[in-house]
Image (cartoon, rainbow, N blue to C red; front, side, top):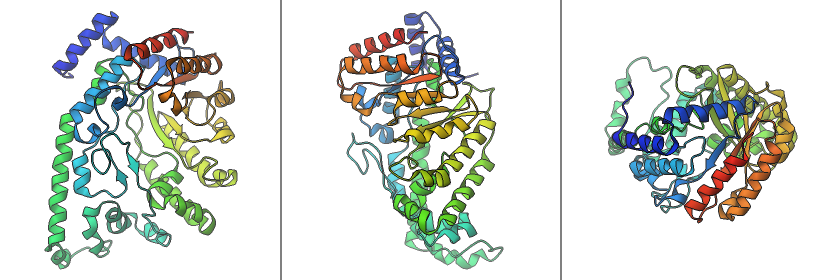
Length: 429
């Protein structure tokens, strides 16, 4: 039996008093609404997913996601309760203190290496050098241990001094003299401290997804197998943007082999979706960014990007998931390739690509999710409402559409709430 926190229980009682429904019924209504849209049916109304950073609508800074887990959790909860979308987001918080102890090189985060209200930044680099493909192919674990991880985490620098351990069946005592040094002692001490900080952080923040569900809000994306387009993984985390761009010309076969190798391993570890747990079908969000026209030609898209992405989408669908590829930049008519996928097998979430255009292209074949531009954060309530009414009119006449509603910042909460309610009424079928 699930234990409900007293604070959550008090909120549940308020919700029931205000709506006349228990949170479990509200949860099922929202899940059904999303499920019907995914399967190209007409729900009672268009599902609305609220796109709102808690720091924009509460007094909680972005740094809370790293240094104040309880405050961050409450801010996420407040946004869900204030604006009543069809999902609730718990974000992706992690311990900033642990990141500091690990001396992370690939990320800058608010409250640590950035001011409290800055957004998380990714520091890209060629963390795998152009002449290291064979090292990875020969032994990925050895490459990660002695080359990659020490470049990403400064605390792991001593690992570069390890010899190759692939065939070290005995006599490990011969290398123990490496460990009797200040740098190894410091590494072990900081790893233990980081572990304690992560444990403390997780205990404080608890199971935020479950708490959202107890308040009637399904998760937008569930937990499941990792991975979107293999090319994105190589480009973002191993070779960098410049590295993969040059590799497409200088060593294309190595690039393709690496993409295939990573994907094969990921899929071999993927477990089927569990339909007996809360929330079905299980949705998997996967951000995509390097396959748009500003990064590669159509020819390269067809060779290096789409085959790997297609395989990932197909295989995850077979495992019972509904992938939600998030096309974060302008993919344009490249998204015609999605017509190759099985009907109602994914949700295509488009951002900078023309939502009106893509909804027409995929109508009757795949569910589309989209909304207004980022500039809506600085727009008036009328501008946001008018644009989203047009989206509902043109993209959702027959079902199969989910509205991602980007809220304006700096407006009175009551006015934003009233706008959302008007859009909900307008979105009814």
